[in-house]
Structures are given as structure tokens and as C-alpha cells.
Length: 427
Image (cartoon, rainbow, N blue to C red):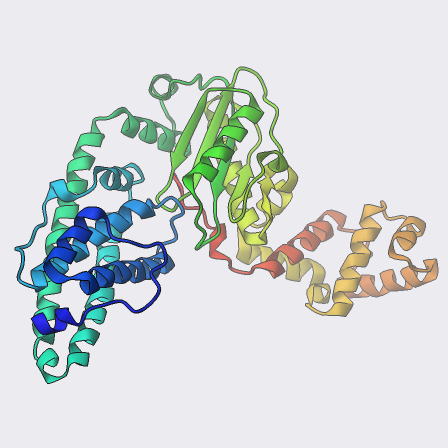
């Protein structure tokens, strides 16, 4: 085992990555500089793999890195016979436990993440053992057992720390606030007076919601998120604001005012990529609290689906949002209304554009022809072809036809995109 450990080093460029001072001193003094570099590199590699598995833009990666370095240091020292299993609840960073509990991240997700790092480290150690030759191959089983034992101990310590933090937070006001918010955004009746006392905002007032998130795989710094939160509250013009964060990294805001507020524009928030926002409409009372939340959530989902830079306001996209609530039936509706006009071909795309222009000009031939740069007779002939495809005059079923034209383009952009599925409270 000592021979295997003595060969450990990290050849790849570590850039600015380094071990925390305590871990670096431990490894360097007992196992040398090569092992110190190896722990640093192995942690960075495992975190990179974890980044690909976890789509949480709010994850405290610097704290997770420190924790991973601590665990791998303990793993290597245990493997070298230098220490017993040094895992206890007090060794878990309090900020990490608080983040996990505050956002209600399941214990199974934490265990899965730790096992993922264990797999990365074990693969690296086995490769190192095999490269030594027969002597190294003989200790592979011992390496696997030691690494697993150490990680088991740390999973147990992490679980104890999270359970302890949950017990502490259970009685705290934050839990009551989250519970009140979750009750308000569901259709079930709530005690408005109690919720008002818990949230410390007048629920009889006007509420304006905003949802902030990223597409799957996106990550962003906290300061950028906080900047948008500040700009949104300032744009509405009220200090009375609630903030709710989900385990998937979505932030929900409600700003409360005494009278109907002005809704900030998406452009005013200066949203940096890859962040996206969805902004609801202002509504009064407890019902308005839920309604603006749902509108903002739906707007954010549509922005993610379309890849809309910055985001979308519900007021600008209400029709599209409503039409896409049931995607399967939306597709059926398009097929029923447009028939072959919904076909994905250049000819049918031109036909759809013609119908849109015809509707936009209030079904007047001359203005529509001018907009399309067509001769009047050419437009009339094209409309006759469109009528034959639709099976009825273009001037009939205009509402249905226009709705189907909106849908056909939305469904073609990002079909079956999982980012449109909302993950927040009450879903």
C-alpha cells in the first residue's frame, strides 16, 4: 500500500486550484508533495464530474470543494494507516448543512453526490495500484474496502449534521415562512390572518411575482442573482419583498405594495446569461399572491423553452403560455386546425407567413400584399390555395387559426423540453 501511495502525483495543470491550508499541511507532512498535488487534482476532477450531474445554480461550490478536500485527505490518510476514521458531525461545515436544509435538498441527493466522488477517487487509486504491477494489484481489494469505509463514515457524519440542522431550523421562523408561502401558492384554502402574521406583509395588498432561474446545466454567482433581486424590488418600488428558493436553484420573489404597482420590464433588470426571468402581473389579495406566482413561473418556463434572452413577462406571452399548458392536446389542435399547413416545409412555412400577414392587416388584400411584397392577384391565388388546405375560407375560424399559428412555431422550437416543467412549491 505504501508503494502505491508513494507513486501518487498529478500531472495535469492544476491552475489556481489548491488544498486548504490544514489539509495541505496534513498530507504534505505525512505523505509528501506528490500526494498533496494528487488530492488537489482528484478533488477538482470529481467536482467537475459532479457539475455535470447536478443542475443547481445555487450550490455553494467553494464550501463543497473544501468539504471534498477534507474527506479525500481523511481517505488517503486512512489508506496509509495514519489515522482512524476521523469523521464526526462537528467536522461538517455549518454553512453547508444550512444550505442543504434551507433549500430542502433530499438526503438521497447528498448521498448520491458523495458516492459519485467516491467512485472517481476509487477509480484513480485503482489505476495507480495497477500501474505499480503485481504488488499494487494485490492491494486493490484493500484499497476499495478502505475508501468505502471512510466514505461510509463521512456519509454518516454528513447525515447526522443535516439531521441536527433540520432539527434546529424546524423551530425557526424561516420554516414557518416557507410553509406559509407553500400553502399560499396551492389552491387549498389558507388562514389569511395567520399567513399575514407569519410573512409580515399585508396579504390584502397588491403582489407582483418574479421567477429567476437558469436552463438545465446553467450556473451563476450569487451576487448576480442578488443584483436582479435588488433591481426587481427597486423597479416595483417597495421594500416589502418575500424570497423563496427551490432545491433546483430557482428563486421566486413577491413584492407587495398598497396600490397596483408598475411592472418592471425584463430589459430593465439587465439579466446576464445564462440567467432567465419570468415576470407575472400584479394582483391583489391572497389569491393574487398565488396568481402572480404562477404567471411568473409559467413565463420563466416559456423563456427557458424558447431560449429567450433575458426572460419573458407574462403579459407579453399569456396566450402562448395558456396554449401550451397541455402540449399533447396542443399538437392535436394544430393538426386539426392547420392540417397540411402545419407541415415542416419551406412551402408551408411561406403559407403560414402569408396567413399571419393577412390577419395582421385585418384581412385586407392590398395592405397584406404590400407587406408581403406580392402582387394583389398573387396573394389572392395563394389565399385560395391556403383555403383548400384548411378546408374552409380563411376568414372563418380566425381565432382558432391564429392560435394554431402561434402554437406551431412554439412547438417546433424546442419540442418536449424538460425545462418547461416547473419544480417549485405546490407543483
